[in-house]
Image (spheres, protein in one colour):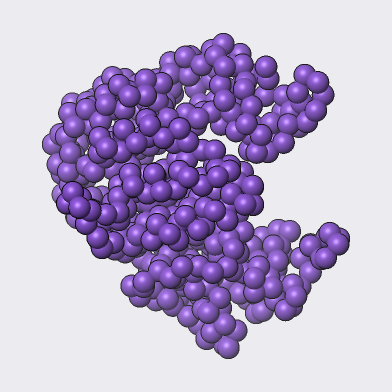
Length: 463
Ligand code: SAH
Ligand code: SF4
Ligand code: F3S
């Protein structure tokens, strides 16, 4: 926008005439958060958002390689842009994120039209890297890098809910997972930096913050300091207490939790701190102890059960979600059935499901006992049907209940409605006007009477 609020024509060059950009983000919340920071950097450089991907002067794909199909998707997108670049040499093509880190130079050989290949640890350096591209270089930035605090303001998609990274990387060695090799070693941000970012978000009017880390329970273990009682000075629990004070922020969430490190102290803090929402995303991956051991997850099914019991004893209505993998190498039918049984037993509100996909450089990819594609498809289908059924049973408890909902925006399918989430993270739709006719706007916290329940969403009306 120009001063005075007159919008610029979309796609016109920015203040320094750098043209327009387009970012497509694949993968997890980490990538989404990185994309928002990279968009902020591009805008600070004078780029503005393009009206459409095929009109952009700079296209950035922030990529994911968690499973083979995620990786392949990027190559098909890139083929189209490479063709465009042959007709328009001024187009700047950037591949960021986890495929970039995994492939590095090899990506340039595969797609010579690329200008910049940059791993996730380099996201905050996008500006510097692009300056080298402008000088005519083809740049690959995938070396291990200490992540510096970003000084530009992220360009966030939501004006109500924001992500805040608290720890980058992952030091676990789950035998199926590429994340440690593409995201590098754990790097915690200092509590002061996190708090500062959250103060700024509160001032901008944000109401909900999700603290992010691939293994968020590891927060602080790379920071120095011991308390007088001999504990680590910096833990996720301490961080929650520290950021809970930020005025204006009404809700706090965090993800992803690892059952190996999830502590009773953390559960107690969540129960005691009113802003921390009653939703826990704790992947269990398999319901069988031998499979868990082969995955090197470092816990048993029983330990997982005890965590959930403890959460429910302190917060009886808490929503529990998880990730699970089926058809891991060597997984027998009986072992797979234990995963199904655990989903029924726990009663998950939501489960992200996947069939095992061998990933380059991970131990399990080389094991001989890989399962047939047909087994993967069959197990995944049966699993998804069960997840839906269990979620529907869990949703039933909301019928006729009064729920606090934080409004995030309009219902994309119905202009007369708005959408938001309950504290337990259920998507909820309801009419966009109060009974007195006043409009409901994003950021409002309202009480909704639930009248319709579905597996993964609710509808209701204002009281
Ligand atoms: N840090 C989180 C998850 C990160 S990856 C954790 O420890 O749980 C997100 C999810 O992708 C994982 O939970 C897992 O369920 C799935 N996933 C990871 N690698 C996979 C693979 N090789 N094949 C299939 N699913 C995989
Ligand atoms: Fe991957 Fe395991 Fe780290 Fe999660 S904890 S990101 S599954 S290695
Ligand atoms: Fe994908 Fe990288 Fe996230 S591989 S799931 S985008 S950490």
